[in-house]
Length: 165
Ligand SMILES: Cc1cc2nc3c(=O)[nH]c(=O)nc-3n(C[C@H](O)[C@H](O)[C@H](O)COP(=O)(O)O)c2cc1C
Image (cartoon, rainbow, N blue to C red; front, side):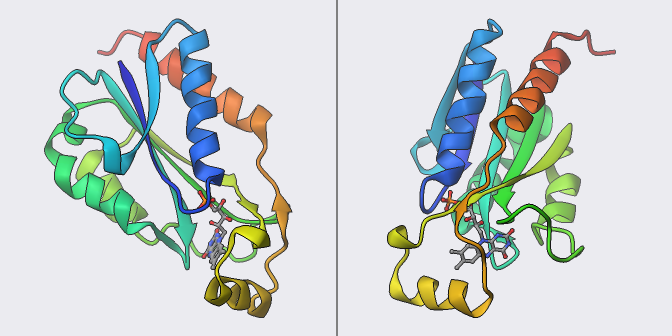
């Protein structure tokens, strides 16, 4: 079983996780997308794909909490990480996101990390978030690239099929 764990505030990251789980299942790898808050341990998991939305440069606390709770198991499993963040068609600054990436790499030695463009629907935001988005002039819209997400899913499937030495 491949667990695709996600932390998502407004649903964009959840959809990406579901797309990945569907893609892995289509490749014959049993897979399930679940919120990090609904996962009670990783017994039975053969691999984990873990993704979080990025807010103010950081992974969501739900995602880092999941890593804290499962660090030992994650360090022994094949793990891939993804972040859903930048809006628009380019990454505005070259500061590496999420801020936790170095620490995540040290703690769980993931096989890879990908950043995918996200989605923003101001109708789903609360007042404070809406003001923040306005202040930083974040573009509104759905910038998720499903083909890119599918090819990364294929890379994971290939990685799991390849013999490990
Ligand atoms: C208040 C706010 C702050 C954000 N800050 C960042 C950021 O620092 N870096 C980034 O790449 N994306 C940022 N985003 C974009 C979100 O990460 C993106 O919309 C993401 O796809 C949302 O995922 P979710 O719907 O799963 O919560 C921000 C969005 C909002 C609304």
